[in-house]
Image 1 (cartoon, rainbow, N blue to C red):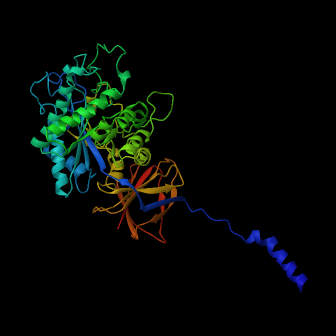
Image 2: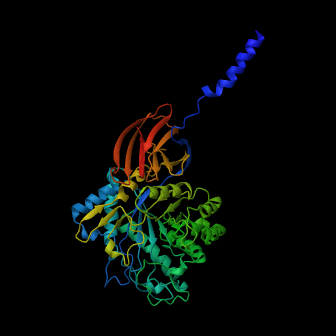
Length: 490
């Protein structure tokens, strides 16, 4: 009896591996944690660029956004596509402030001539936003100061004439007052510069004979100048009764430069500057590869350094590329949110009139193109952007996500105290292979999610693909190659 037991036990152990089954991996493991909130989300935005390059507006007027070519019905269509209930539903707008609003110290301001189409776009957008019961958050950015404020005394002069620092602060404040009081626009932030850190855009002696030609407006802003002007502008705003308007440190070309070129450090070390700072800003342009000085990443060192001294301060991407208007562009958005740790994203000019950009725009992606015959086109970039802009509405929260495939980045927004449903965005950046994704959802009681999809082959353009059931806390989904899919909780 004992011998028989031992014999059968031996046989069972010997043959057991042949009966065991290997675990089956059904797809990419993704986890979404609505019970792990990371930060408040201020929204996705839009930027209408009007006067961006001309060095003499009287001789060469410019409307890069193209509204001047459209008829009333076309304008209404675009406003609805951007701000309407079924459109992008953006919650943030950026307005540039060009150098042509004053010509001499103490001189009269002309805020209307060079900005009429941009202001019309934003006024209409605000009205459409109010129709759906929401509001806009507006930031205005100094594109470049008047010529007289520079040592070169030319448009795009490289160096600040420090004798005019008060004039520059007044220039900023007067524009904000105009927008808030006359235009009735909710301007909440004023930003000091546009890519003013890039000193190599001028020759080393600063005597470029072509200053004023062939580029968007800039002036070189040292970290010291930024720090000084943050404090002075805060004082001027307070004196003008604009205490609710925050000051930003301007907008470096990317987060890497903000973190490592000295801008974050000087602000973090100056108590008064830190107190004066209302928002952290930078452009979110990304460029991998160390072989170029334009290298950038989604770096949060500078932002977190300032937040360590001033907890809770929000950070915005105030310009970022539309890339190739594809799924990889949404991956860049993912990295700005989760790696750069921002609270809002505004892409570069969303509506473009290509012939108006001298030499061709280095960032030609957009949501719309306006043609010289007065027609317009909705581009692929619009539909990819719509996937995330509708998901991440102002007042929602960014939530923790995990994905065991770098080609499947996932973004999640929790509803918080808003009227918006919990939402998440699944991207497949691989443009040759469909991928099965197993999505496990925590902290959300919804048993159904409604989904919309955009694909690089344009067979889907924010196309409704149906309702997905949550079974045992999971959704199984086949993400097509080069696709972005947004799921909204029912």
